[in-house]
Each structure stands twice: as C-alpha cells, then as structure tokens.
Length: 227
Image 1 (spheres, rainbow, N blue to C red):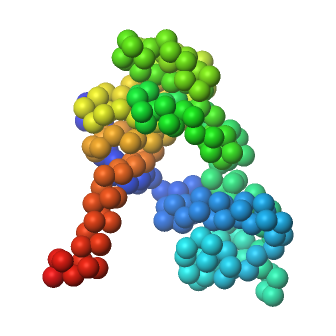
Image 2: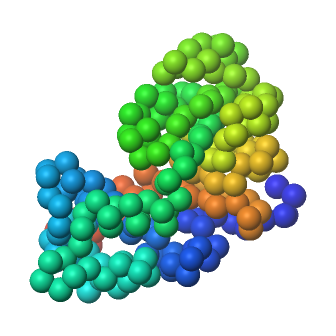
C-alpha cells in the first residue's frame, strides 16, 4: 500500500463514539441478540443476571456496559427488553439500514450473499463484485456480479458504506485499497492476512483458521498433551 494507513487486526483502534469503550461496543451485538431472542419469547422485562447469562458475561460486566448507554434498569424489575434493545440499536447505528458490497464471489462470497441474517440486523447486500470472467455477469442471490473495475460505480450508485472482502489473501490489500478509494468507511475481511487502511476506516478481521488454531491450543493443554 502507499503507507497512508494503519494495520488492521481483530478490530478498529478508533475510539468508540458517544464515550462508549471499544470493548463494550464489541459486546453490544451479543446483548442485542439476547434481547431480541427474549422479545421473540414474549419476555418484556429481564434481570441483569438472566441477560448476562444469555450473553455469556458476568452480571457486573453487563451492568457496567449498559451504564455507558445510560441504562441502569429498575431495582426489583430489571430492564425492559424492547426499550433496551432500541437503545443498543441506536448506539450501534442500526436505526439506519447499512448498505454492503461483497468483493469476491467464490464459495464464501456465495454463502454471505445468501445469508438472511444481514437483513434481520439492519444490513442490505446491494452489490457483488469479482474479477473472474467466469463469475462476472452471473446472478447470485438476485444480484448480478459486477466486474472489479466497476467497484467504485457500485459503491456510489447504492450509497455503500461497508465492504466485505471474501477473496484469497493475495488480492486482499488491493481490494481494501479500492474500497477505501471508492469511499467505503467500514471493511469486514475474511482474507487470511493483515491489511492496512487509513485511520478513518474501520477494519474488522474474521480469521477462521486462527480461531481454530486457538481452539487446538486449548484442547491440547486441556488433554495434557502439551505438558
């Protein structure tokens, strides 16, 4: 790259907005998922203990995180599930639908394009881009795959703010550069390599192989084989 940016790891290093710590921001989607699940079950109020259990954190951590949202619950009553879910959505910026482009329409790109969970969580995949002539022009999940050199056009035409990189490692930095140049301010990458982006762009990395290696480490030491 041209040396203009920072190296991305597991998440953005930018300070969270509204004074919410980045570590808290990372946990908010888990709280939101638990709250929406409670709503689906018809639960209108929930204690910090039950919500913490569903989210996989301790109650003290949950109460501290929610205090940054200005939500403290009511003693003996707990939190209103619908109201708290709305608060979390506001902080996460989910009141407005975010438009997404996926670059790389191989097996992973296909799976992501067909994933119905995006729409349920306030995201719309509006563009698919690839540079393989055999893929360009095909239709995936109702969208025509556009050539890579039209990425900026796709971003501008659909007001895209988030790009997903589903390419192999080698072209990933070039894709990240193109997304940044097109005006995208948030990137989620599945490419197994570290990327560099400017400071104003948020970068999140999903490295499945690394996560499996960490699980292998814990499994090895749990079984005593690493002793």
